[in-house]
Amino acid sequence: MTTLYFVRHGKTEWNLEGRYQGAHGDSPLLPTSYTEIAELAAYLKAIQFTHLYTSPLKRAQVTSETLKKALKQPFPVTIVDDLHEFDLGQMEGMAFTDVFKQFPQEIAAFREAPADYDPTTINGETFASVIQRTNAAVQTIVTAAQPTDNILIVSHGAAMVAMIQALLKTPIADIRKDGGLTNSSVTTLETLDGGISYQLLDWNETCFLKRTLSASDTI
Image (cartoon, rainbow, N blue to C red; front, top):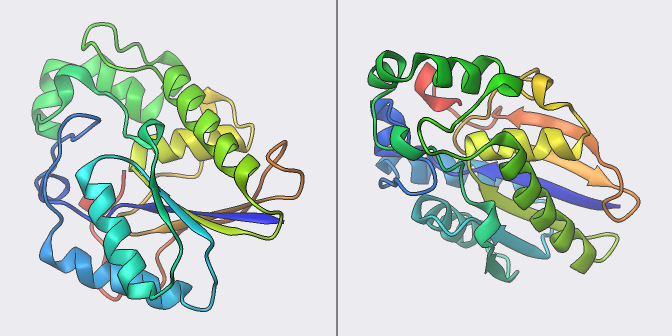
């Protein structure tokens, strides 16, 4: 079986401040995030990884570099453009509270009713578009892998929820059914048939994080 370990990037300044980063916004990792990525590496240390694929956004790339260094394994790291976060259009860089005031319908659907999400007003990206590009990227990754490979994929909270649930054949309306993903968390899937189907092994694992989590950690 090919096993995929999906890692959400470490917590950033904008995550802490409650701002949407999206595909174009970015902010540095918090100093504490490097410790948390090391805690993740300690949790994963017994697994031999063959490859790491990362979003091109800096917060994901820094997470990937830090994770590889902590794991002390020689696997290659490949940047995959289609693993980037949702394009959130006009919401990017805005505080959550301001988004709720200015775009109440859009953000309510984005967070609670994905099937009703229409990002036309904000010039954003649809769930269908995110699913199409990210699932195509994962299929390319799996096709290139050996059947027994363990693969790391470092990406973003909202994009990974859509990506992973779509791989599990979850309808868009139910994409939020298992909740969000926490910074530095790992979610694990396996495929026994080269990406035709996937099975969920672990959702949003954070047992290795030593601090008490807060609402700003998960999206």
